[in-house]
Length: 147
Length: 361
Image (cartoon, rainbow over all chains, first blue to last red; front, side):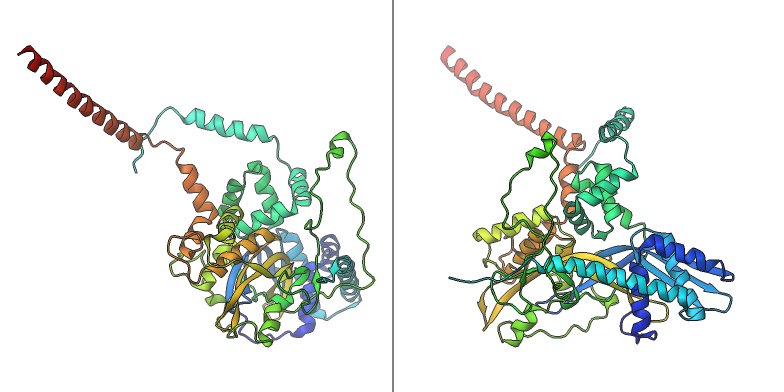
């Protein structure tokens, strides 16, 4: 799966990562708004399932399976064949569908103020949350001294 | 082993289950949410042993089993089989983990430094009984640093390799879909390293601790020192239909490397990891990995011994099946016992009769 060359580039990857971790209620509200002006959408997949997560052993560089993560997935298309895709950890089909709707909208029209603002706000929120946590973590840094 | 069919128990069996569930009361979403929010380390332990990462489902499993861990893990493993596998994520690499705890007992000055993170390591273990007297315990706030800790920390083992302290390792060239998978194939011995580490990742915490502890106390070949212990969050990196990689979210993971002594000019290292934050499990599991190389067959640090005996569902299932009806087996034991007693009694009676006859003569 990861031996193929990705085609969407890092910006699309970052955008999808923000959508996957965006605050669920805000994401769903945005998708509802966008749907009002979008045409017919075909749902190819909207299901829960598992993603196996491998990890690399640091001693011998051997990849092994850590376990499976429950995810929700949505895969949709519009009449022109544009694709929208959402996958989020956890059991929330609406959230995955909302992500797919926003992805489809961006695939169809490019970024527009509504989606750009949303991505920008959610990115800022997620960065702030991480920074808050990691400042607390930094407070636990210890300098060991031997006597 | 033999079993005997029994009749007349259907109603009792139904009432027994009802009694178990009645004792737990009504389970609703709020109870599940409370367990999820307040018992993160218990949730982590259950998710690791179930090999299924879902905090919500782990909390539900705990709620409906009343915290009976073997049953909680069993019900999660069973539920897992109802779900399709959608993808295999990009392998998690140590230096990509959002690291929140990272310590070394072997080296005090490690690149990136030592970060205690959330821990009770240096705390007094005092029960907050005031809570029971109506005085809630509100933890004091953390005095956050001005700058955040680096979100990513380098691999200590890689740094040690650069110093010539740890043996070189070949780059992994196995495609994710070709990684050996215990959920799709049997565990055979000698086990591949991928099978051993996957099996330890889903092993039962208490079992791993008991066997790892036995090695630490001297029933193994090597006494461990923690080279690095790391708790953090790993991204679940999947692919969009266009081929673009993205993170679908984060999962909590634990990793431990333990070291012992020099061998062949390099430090020996053992490794283990699991879902969730469960450092006792990964330190004990890494100790078993460290001890495996020259372990005598039948010893607690031999991989066949510890992998078989720490598989939670098999171990608990085998243990509790002994309480199920074994009447035929046991009846045959009783028959054999009675037969032996009868023969012994007959043998004792015969010489006595013979003696009586001799004295009469």
